[in-house]
Length: 222
Image (cartoon, rainbow, N blue to C red; front, side, top):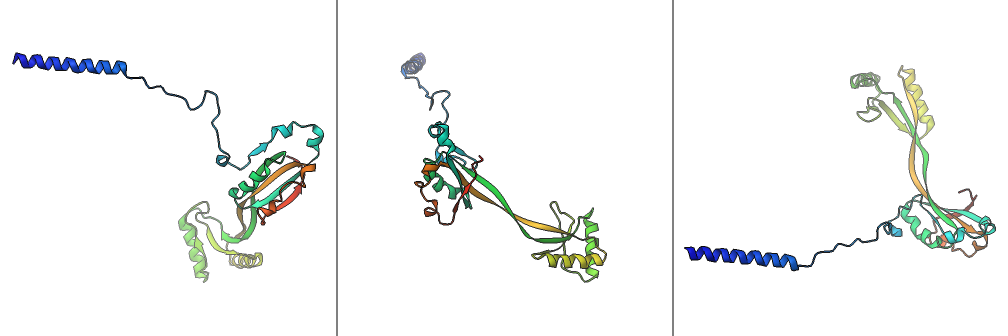
């Protein structure tokens, strides 16, 4: 029994010794930073948010003031998405003084909405709806949510005269009816650039790259 205990102690001490030796002789891991402190992260051109980004060639910007003064500015567009701009921008940006993209929200009239303004409660709105039904006016619905909750919609009309006729009809029956112009909105994208006057003729024709866009000369006010 004593011999077994002695062998156990010897094995245990041997394992401890091997562990300590291994720890002391294993090279320590060294961790490196990807870049030196203070160096900005590299961003690929394809990763940039194109919208409202301005590229300027500092070498060209530092040329004598007369050359910078003799410049012309153009606006290219319209593009339906930012992704359509990138190929044109890549071609132009090395040959111009400065270049930028621009986003514009366009709107147009999309018709006319005839409605009875929102009631204080759903029950009150339903009560007005029942009054309409008794007059055999069926084409309405009560808005059940959103900013127009408890409003009674009486129809959307493309032509103003049709909306006005509906308005007059229901007002004559004693209802508080109003008309609102409905608008549609969508984004359009443009590419603006300034170029030295003597370089205009040598610049690539962007219509060859995208026949659906136009280039218009504009004032250099940016």
